[in-house]
Length: 113
Length: 109
Image 1 (cartoon, one colour):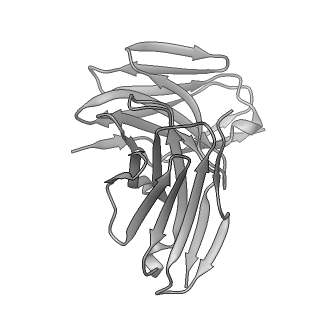
Image 2 (cartoon, helix red, strand yellow; image 1 turned 180 degrees about the horizontal axis):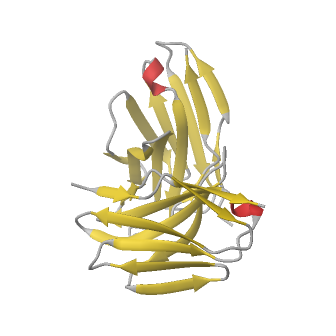
């Protein structure tokens, strides 16, 4: 079974803080994704990565950056957290360059005060 | 533009059959995914349709019509544990996925 883990289930941060969300997958997947999920808006893609050190912007990259130094790990960084970044953050991975099933981590619920 | 629509909420009775519809307008469409998401948990994969027609997996079936931009998820013999949100997602281009806002299904005893 594919396992995708995220560093925290719940996180509370203050406005202006730098926030790191970590995601690790154990199935040697090529692709990794970061989404945020908000009521009434569904899942929206922030960034994705199709290889180590490669990244592509998704639909809402503003205010975020990512890092993929190792194949199994994909980090989402909020450079200066703002209250409108309060959300559920979901990491996902998929096997290869073809359209594949995504496997999701348990999510991190971030509250920015 | 890219758009996926599905009903916000549905209610059904235990033991019944329910059909959750999804319509999409996308370019570069590859196939259609369905995910189940229980409250506070991650989405889990249910089905993937690339070709037109019905795919059956136990109590769950999924249908796709590419010409009509339409899919549905059919749940039979509903159980209380089927109460969840059901997400429709279109795979477009190589890496991208467009998600609907999800349909919250309540199963009543």
